[in-house]
Image (cartoon, rainbow, N blue to C red):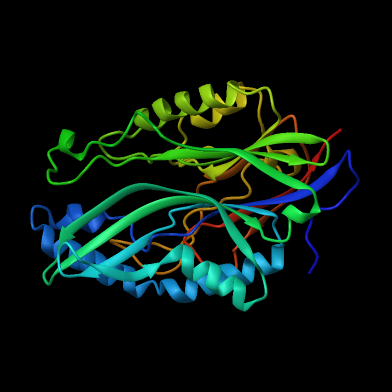
Length: 328
């Protein structure tokens, strides 16, 4: 199919998608078996394998082929490695699996930027397991020749991070989240595209104080530019009443942004998580949170859709795809 990118020199129509790929675990089994870390790591690995990451990458590629986004904001883009401690080898590279699956469907995307947030290697019952968490922005490979220019690419790790040692869980490095952005010139206009994955709430932080501190950092970065902005991500902040409704969404709206889903759809719709459970539960679930979001400031949204809602699922998150007009 043809790209959504079209128009004349002064206006361009582009399509954006945000997708959490799902690491295959919420890492809670580490804490269930703590302080027996090798047992927890082995149980986590078994859980990751059971989610069939290679098949899920193919399903996501099918979804991308259907939606034809020009830019894709990805979160929870993990690499899992196993083997001898200190020399583990790749078991699953979610980004490469997706790029290969897209290429097999004659869909060429290239990474605009990839950011590694945290790498943890821990002993299992046999050998070691290494977990790497990343965010990524992808762009259609055939988009740049149509007059799209990309510059000023940056990544940033939030200064407010999760310190497991503060709750008595030792032996793990700081858990970072962050954002990335790039300036995109489309025709005669330039906008800034952001992608973020923010910290979740926890039993020891039920109102998301850590996440809200990260949101303060993000809003400062958003306000630092006068360019129009498209902001995509997994915010772990429910935009509807219910679980995980933190202050983050309100802070972004207060900075002059529009929640593109709400421009077209009524409240209590568009829930994106969970499509299935991990860790201590399994099977299908009923989504109760709208945490995968696209916001805009100074950009006109033409259309918005949910994606990835049909089983078998590519992720425990649904996605959001939005078509936007760049230029007045």
